[in-house]
Amino acid sequence: MPPDHQANGLSRSALGTASGLVAARRPLADGLLALLAAAALAAVGSAFGPWGALLFLSWPPLVVLTYRQGWRLGAALAILLSLGLSLIWPGLLAVPLIIWLAGPVWCGWRLRQRTALGQLMAESVVGQIGLLVVLGVVMVLVTSGVGGFAASAAVVLRDYGNFAQSTAQAARSAALAGGSTAAQAAAQGQLYLQELHTFLPIVPAVAATVVLINTGLGLLWSQAVLRWLHEDPKPLPAFATWSSPPWLALAYLVGLGLFFLWPQNTAGSLIGANLLTVSQAVLLVHGGALLYFAAAKLGLGRGFRVVGLALLLLIPVAAEVLAVLGVVDSALDMRRLRTQKT
Image 1 (cartoon, rainbow, N blue to C red):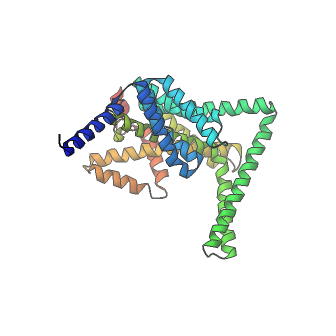
Image 2 (cartoon, rainbow, N blue to C red):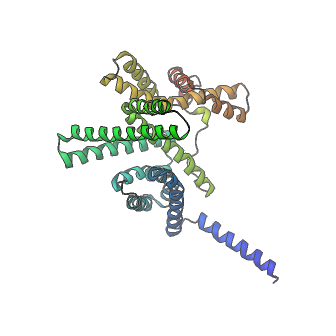
Image 3 (cartoon, rainbow, N blue to C red):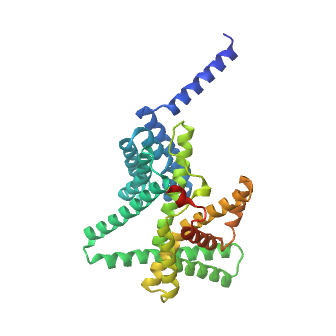
């Protein structure tokens, strides 16, 4: 056989072997591929620090492995990754990492059962946040007892204050290096400090929103990988039919009332700010889906709808407007989605 024919034959053989490994459902092959994928994604994410590595690796390898091989192998990989990351970055504790990585394992297992994606996201987000809160409470009780909560809160506030001061100092240094005067640099640093102090009361809501967004993006990415592997996960509903549960609109309205009617920096206003932050993040997607549906009814092309919605999100008040549209649609069901389900 001529050399070029032999080379072509070897190339086709290598491609066939690689394709067979990707499509294989053998536990060893799937486990090794998932581990290699997780390591590669962690290396990419490490450019953003330890949390970047965790964010990058946490979903597709674990969801795909659990979906194809079951929760035991998925959980084993989650524990292995948690221990490895905690050794590389000692500041990342293994137990919280395992709770964080339990999300994709749970989602991969529930995808096998054809669970609706809205329910799946709710289960994963509530479960992760609930377990992390329980873990924090248990750690305080074990280390400091019932009276240790105030001391733990003081430590957290102190650490956050130190972080805010260091961030403000970095902003001042960057401004000076960029040619700003001392007064301008000081003003820039003070602005960062004020923003971080304003941000502190809604840290719980921001953390919950980050978990929610990470879960949604992780599921989208994982489903794309599963389809590439010729699997058949439960399909995503069309974006024009996305909606939020009606009780979320009520939470948004309650948050508005608490935030604007209660005196600032009181418990009521802080609860309202957190309710607003979380509910608005979901309701703006609901409002965007409503506009997307209306644009389709008007005969606008898909590309135009996608680009138009992306440009709309660049407007500063768009999030609030879309959230209000989500609240209105929750009450009026303008797309008749609940009627169709009934």
